[in-house]
Image (spheres, one colour):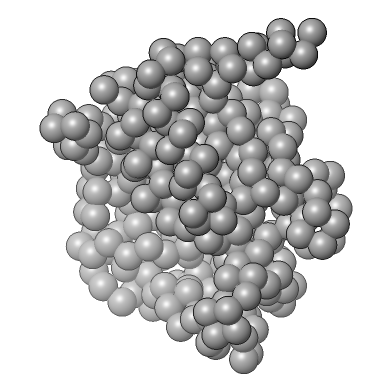
Length: 358
């Protein structure tokens, strides 16, 4: 029986072609060891997972191991969900992507109310003052993070941190700004008459049976949610994440999930179960800084001197690290969820891709 279990495990890890899969598995084990990686990795091809393995601890104090069922904070992968929700409303004729913020939030007080369009929020060319512009580790250690370490409603986050002046002309300059997606979340609420969480559940999570995905709240105990840690160079040690209200990241980064649930979302997206092909084409338009609508889109990504289209959505909030990396032409998906900021997931995913794509 023990031998049969071993063979079944071996097939799951290497069932995609022994040589290719073995290279990926050996590389991952080596990379994990060298970089002290904690988390779960899933590799899939043509919608089916062929590798899934967890490393390290979900809780360092109690030495609780990470497993395939561990839930992780997925940070800015949330933005991909927010983009899909907006684009679904666009398909339903409830949102015009070329209309301004004020068309849907008439009480919005920011300078961009009548100047910034929904498209410019989606592709992060709004020009609105960056809500995290002055936030550094040094300032957070000294004074906290007003945006995130104090309790705020989503309305307060919109008013206090997402309604600033225009720093650049809308549509002209790309700037990664959580404020853009805070505004999109509030537009979703105003158009649907539901909270962002309620509409997320109704439009994506429940239809796809993503029972291990939701919005993280500071006051809510979420079973199997990994604690998060990051490395402080000044004291040369792993430490607990700084105190924060995860819900304050709202539609820009407040979600948690598992690797299997992220694969459900990825499969549904690329199988056109969430959006029509013409709408996906909009979402995957590579604009300034190669950013589409909520995702990066690399049209000529080189792997072994061949060019591929890569759809990538990383996420990072202190120790919460996440990566969704999809090779469009190959139907190959890399999902990495981590609870420690010990390595570059951009580098990790790229190196895995070079070993699973011929």
